[in-house]
Image (cartoon, rainbow over all chains, first blue to last red; front, side, top):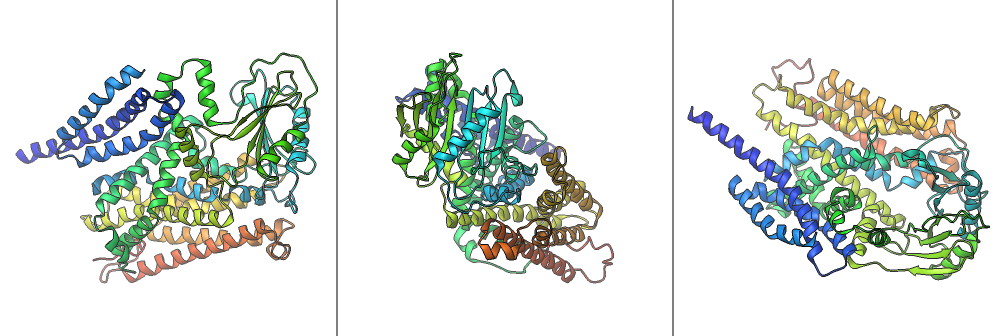
Length: 93
Length: 524
């Protein structure tokens, strides 16, 4: 029974990481591409800079989601970055 | 992290393999297009771009009199036609556009066999076929993103990246596959990272539209952004007043004075034939590693120079350079061959990675004779996805030569045949024992490739000996390349067959042939 509970827990943790990687990766990339608009550069340049950087952000988040010590740590990391980028994106859009 | 590497590589691995291989071939897209339209003579001498542009502009005016916009790509050293497309008023979606290839010498629309030429592989590379470009491009983006993740995770997995690189254990089954995969990946690493990232950049406006949606709201802002990305000019509403268009030839001449005789890439027109007409002459790709727009804008009636656009902002320029790096259009012949080889290495990196999954898994199987469904699926998809794709791509070239020239919808039947043959290879892979299927398909690809020069000699006036004698390098090069690729496939077929035979375990019946691992897997 405990073996089974352990198995369910580890599958749950893996699923959690996969969701963090897929959704978190794209969400942070998108958020970053909007937050860039807060930079003191012209709008077209900011839009393009955000798009250019977004793929690096997305790849970084996926790596982080699987490199973090636990699924919870991964989510906390994502939440922290979102907390920084969110207000910037809000103010800029 | 190694799990992430494996799964991000595997899940879209066959899509990635197909994208890599068709992309590799696309570095010779223009040459393939020439080969696939053998009726058109090769351009023996360089033509004057100014006169060519005038001829084709006149012809477009004749065949699409109401076009509100047109764009033509002038011939360079690599193509023998002028490709142009135009927008028709009132049409919607695909019907709003017309396109055609034009003979640069006469200016007339080309009467050659219906074929998509090298453009099929190019378009398939990023948007596939039988699905809308939108969904195709999203799928391609997803595949490219997982490639990027697989590369980064792969680098992290390989802490001993350099020791691994210099360790090569030939013919040692799984170790050899792993070493081959590592060597291909590490040696080409900068190229793989570059080509994957820049591939995402080419379609980034589709993948992350959010910044643009948040910031760009007015038509003026939209135009400002568009000007950073391309040379399509906005001429506003046509006045409706028909006037004699100005001399395109004279405008191209002015551009030539600025950039050099052969350095003109495109001519774009907005509202041609109208009093509000604008013409943009853009600079060619040669001599600069950027796709950012560099163009001169003219009044389309008086021919007066209106503006010179020769720089864009820093971010736009970065995008332009990345875009150019991906397409490699700036490159001369030698650089393009390097691109081709590095890209072929990337294809092999994906291919060896896919094969490794089955090689590793097989050892862990409880009963190697009866693998579970997932294993069998990957194994069969590997065969059709790797060896089968070679067969199908070569079949497209065969279809190009064998389908009746006057056939209806011919260009599409070439492509349908590509997919039919690809489907048949999957069927074959499902029905035959795995190793036999590998060997048979690799031999089929080798035979089809090796016979291309014969087929070409039999169906065109430009056989290999003739093209070598007159220095027709597009035709000679294609024939020779097919022979080289035939050799590569034959070597792979022989090695696969030999390894399977060597490793057949004693004592067990080998009648089914499937049991001993495929492709030289060791029982270590």
